[in-house]
Length: 198
Image (cartoon, rainbow, N blue to C red; front, side, top):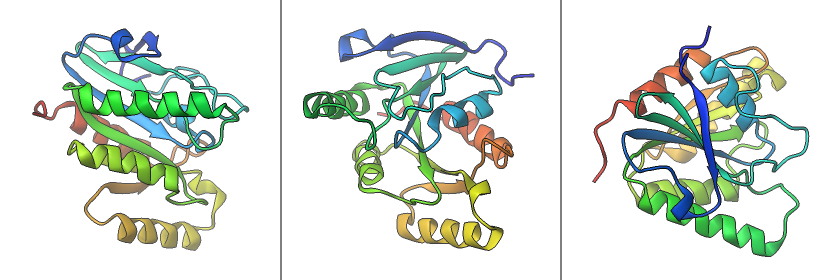
């Protein structure tokens, strides 16, 4: 059973004016288009096809707002870095992300979804920079951990933790084996319970 029985889709937005009212608390989820973002969301919320998954990277092209509990939301941000889209659309996404991070007072934390086999990419660094500019707590899920041998996965985790330092917390995660789901869910609830940012 889902830990968020009231979880539901609210709306998609393509511009700042279309965002849901900036009240309560929300946590954003961002990541490279093929890093397993939708699958991670589905495991954490414990709802199949809650966030729609696709074999075609980059299907999330809007800011998708989901209600979890009263006045608590999860926000699925557009995938980046892999989707075959125009330069103009890419620029629009970048501006939309800047608007989102700078404008949302209810934004309490960021989950950054990273394929453990690729580690932190330039696109991930841009997202971390957005978060750092607004002092937003960030948690990195190293997804697809099941694709590596245990020793390789442990080494990758240490390397990412060393590279990020105090910028973000990091954990292993696998949508296939559900590794790390409890830790991720606990971090989500921790972010949602934080006092509002100035």
